[in-house]
Structure formats: C-alpha cells, structure tokens
Length: 68
Image 1 (tube, rainbow, N blue to C red):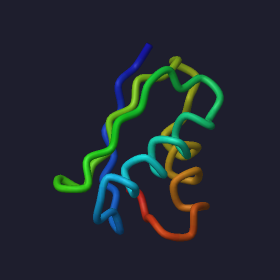
Image 2: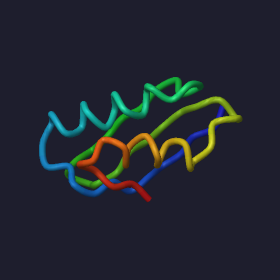
Image 3: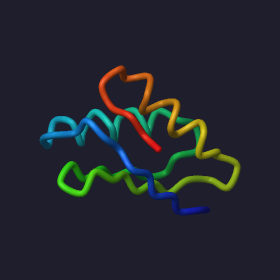
Image 4: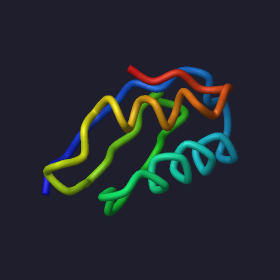
C-alpha cells in the first residue's frame, strides 16, 4: 500500500471534492481517496501497482479539474 498526494486545480466546493473523490476511487486498486478544495489537494491510498499517471488521468478526464 502506498500514499500519494496530488495537486488538483478547479475545485471550489464540497461537491467538487466528491467528484474528484469519485474519479479517484474509480481507478482499480485505490483503497481510499480524499480531496480538499481549500488546499487544492487530493490524498490517495492505493495498492503498490497503481500509478500516479492513472490517477492524474482519471481526474483530468472529468474535464473540469486538473491534477499534477
């Protein structure tokens, strides 16, 4: 299990946090995900084989938020 922190732009409310959380949890191997719009971050706990690129892609595919 590994912990990953990402910067996420475009979030402005609790609803945004939930959308980012849902996008991250859709990635196979993600155990938990939390987003914080005030800090512009997302914290993920996932299996070791989950790549950062997969997580970023999932967030970016929402078309609203950008991760790095």
